[in-house]
Amino acid sequence: MRFILPAMLLIVGIIHLLPLSGVLSANRLQMLYGIAIEDPNLEILMRHRAVLFGLLGAFLIAAAFLPTLQLAALVAGFASVVSFLYLAAAVGSFNEQVNRVVIADKVAVICLVVGAVAYAMNRLNADQI
Image 1 (tube, rainbow, N blue to C red):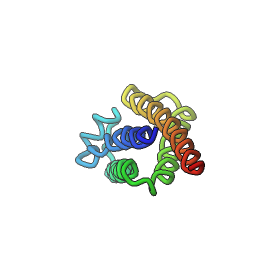
Image 2: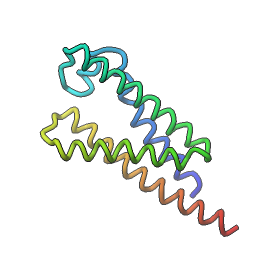
Image 3: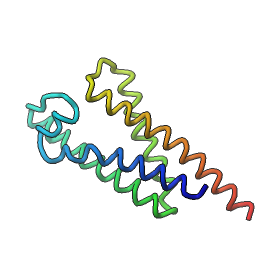
């Protein structure tokens, strides 16, 4: 049971690292999201978004190995994926590349729920000892 939470955090961390390649160029962002990044302001914002996802992914992976960070990682992971899924549902009409992100975040939210249950069970077991 104690390896479930780290495994789930690793999976969610890897999912969050995938957009990091967008920091390299507007062309890479276009490949990731299927949108033209022609405005320099949008390029800056989207490349910075890639950096932030990289940081969150690194934090989630670090938390897999550092139990003191696990609760914060679960909260941050939930905030990331739930907010994106809400926005995608609220706006709708997204392209196939963004739909892949939606699917990845649905996988991530399932992993986070499993991880949160494992976290709670680990805490309960620790309190009973």
